[in-house]
Image 1 (tube, rainbow, N blue to C red):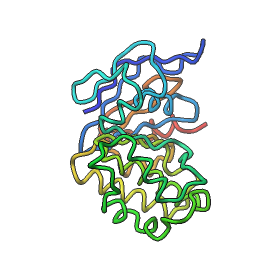
Image 2: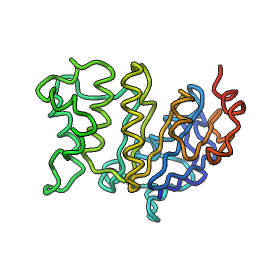
Image 3: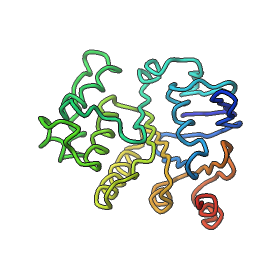
Image 4: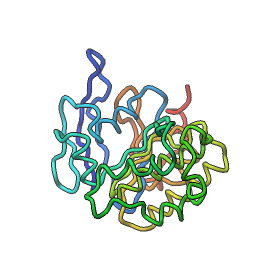
Length: 231
């Protein structure tokens, strides 16, 4: 289980995260919602180790990983799918997938069959350059690259951003499948309320770097959450 406990993060004099606490459990989807600029991406970057926190603690399966490097966290089966996808445009689809090998011991440096079962279109595009794919296909590639690392925790930063509705449904299907296996914790950052509500087991709403609402989906008051998402 992931436990983020009262973390604070600064960019110079700017206080980006203020005593943020969030939990993600295997077999469940935790959704983090909020407007642009409230600290959602900073939270994920802190969890994966791309941004250092000033105070607080991040624990993964009971181990304090607060000061570990991002690559050490990746070796602990934590995967990150960044906002904007950030695939390598000049590498082929297969080469992009193989970049996930960096976090794996040599015996596991293969592309799992279930990656192509979840994203069959990628198998037909292995020789195509990543930059030649559509935005939706690049998003599928970014998620598939994360799955190559055999994650036990996957951090997804707005996977629906700029994606056509048919691909959004495919991504939703994949997330449901991963949750259903019961072994992976999923932390999903989203602004698209209906997508998040449909997948969430628990939710956290952020505003100005702080958690302002949190709880189980069954206890969610939709009007309260939507009010925090509107500009």
